[in-house]
Length: 129
Image (cartoon, rainbow, N blue to C red; front, side, top):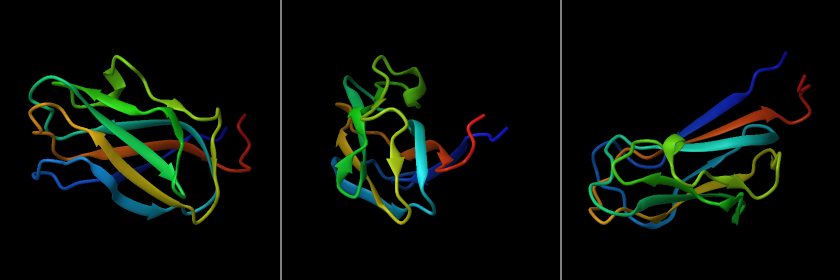
């Protein structure tokens, strides 16, 4: 049985506080992907109120209907009060698509560092059972 794969990409360095902005990192997909889920993590959590909000774009269009959030004081989106939701179940990304990561919001303290995103997927056309 085929196991899901993960593509993990750093969207910042480990020590500089992240800032709001578009295309914090850009990469190309190595092959067609069927997206199952997405996650994000930090090395240093946000220090005060608010959430860190991250968007992932496929050739300029968000793949998410509910963006990734990391709650204040947390290091991962895995425990977020509001989980991310794909724009389409089993979202498909074509090979060589330009994937960008945006930071839409940071916590009030703005102390977050070490942002990474994880795309959990199957290669398109792979047998899922």
